[in-house]
Figure 1 (cartoon, rainbow, N blue to C red):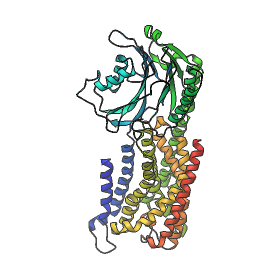
Figure 2 (figure 1 turned 90 degrees about the vertical axis):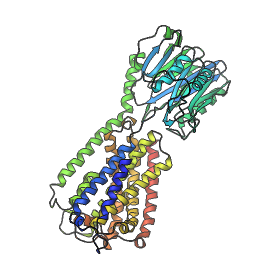
Figure 3 (figure 1 turned 30 degrees about the vertical axis):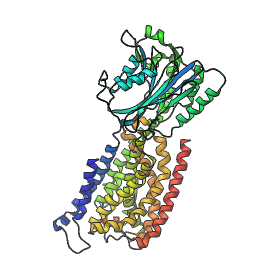
Figure 4 (figure 1 turned 120 degrees about the horizontal axis):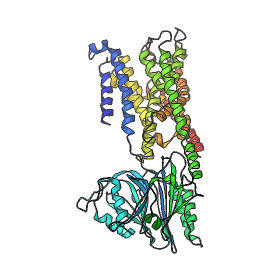
Length: 590
């Protein structure tokens, strides 16, 4: 973020070295090299957007997971869906001895996801955004320096939920949490341990007797600390578990498996494996890639006494289950392959468009305008350049087209940056719906106003920057809103369909290129709306980007008194575009 702020400050200082409405030159020597400053400023602007992308996408992404405990009569069951973006997990057994309890683990050796120990204590966790907590350095230190050592020590030393709570209250804590821990034991007791708003541990207990406890990817003690809130999996599990409690028949593992199946995930992330543990009888039922008709059954005491070799979780299952899992993995990762094709194709189109730009007739004219336009809009800007260059006579339509491209570049670029930031931070649970709206609407408007229109056009028009800044704002509002109105209906559903978590964690350049191509596709509609306005404005003698592109004339911008009604129209069209985008988004998501 500091880099972004420095770049913004540098960008806004360049236009100060310009003329004040044709009167006095602030620094005359700078005007002799005006083109050099403008090109430097364009480079700074593009670099600014790039650094913002990098700064806001360095996120740690939490695992998904749905965890339940239910007790009814003499039956106690624990269930956990491990949702993430892997094709497989790891299975290993740590036998016990006189100093520790034996544990069966699923996950990774440095990141155990689930475990059941020899005393009938079960563990799973829900990934959450990082939250700072009180480490309580005055307490007993944890054995080991890594985050996972904390929970592994609990499972090796505790036999009941009551002992877990006592252990946590005696020991130091790492200074942050990126999950909440769900424990259950064979007495029917269960607890969710999570960070409270004050940074202290909160223990959310299951009520004694018949009942249940559910945790998904929001902090039950502090829902603001969430990867997903409200959560449909949490609500669905509550509904189904409530019906099981009310049902007259005894509980069995099939009942719990049906609940886990109902809340499993397929899509941007998926349920790799499911654990259902009968804690009363010490039996584990394992499922791979949501194949709930083909469990592997493990008796805890027998497994601990004669542990099988550690290895991939998939190797526990017969060949037909492994093959079906491979087929399902290919299906859920299909968006990744599509994104790679689209992303690479769009990158190639931009490169080809830039090459063609330099072989067009009159190719040197306006390159400071057309090079950035082609970089951002690709073949769309190249086609516009060809249309404009077809004749030496600059007609009203060609002027309006140049103005349209100039207005569309900052809207498309800033929308892309905002969309990447929103998707990445939403995936990590670090952004509210209000913040999403501010990014999507605010960044294109602010970026177009402060980084493109005002500094670039004030420089080329030899205007007083600060006076021009406010004079240009109504024009920026109209063109930004019209551009977004066209982008929304195309970009919202298509970007949602293209989301693949494995390309967001970490951010893949090919999914960004895919969103780039989608944004520019939506920009075609947005450009048509802007063109209608610019055709009206050019007809009345207003122009700006034409002058920046090297054509003769003076930078003239309509004031608020002349285009206030266009602002109202653009707001109305923006609302319509947003509504259409939301409708199409829901249709594709459903």
